[in-house]
Length: 76
Image 1 (tube, rainbow, N blue to C red):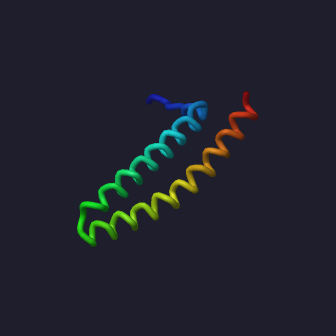
Image 2 (image 1 turned 90 degrees about the vertical axis):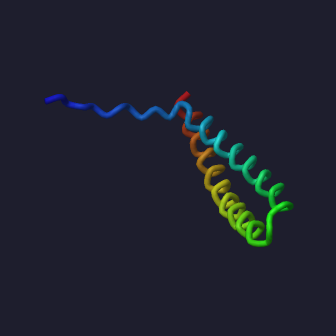
């Protein structure tokens, strides 16, 4: 029987990945805002609601990014 060992925690690129997620989320918000001009009222309401959730996610991601940057600064 083979024993598996857990991989060590590699956080070296976490800040970069989080920044990419922030940038992608902002881009998605812009695209949703642009599409609101062409959709019906229901589509517009759905896009507004989704962008509100994205705003909340951005706040969490930005906080997580600060944590990762602080972690990175202590391990350099």
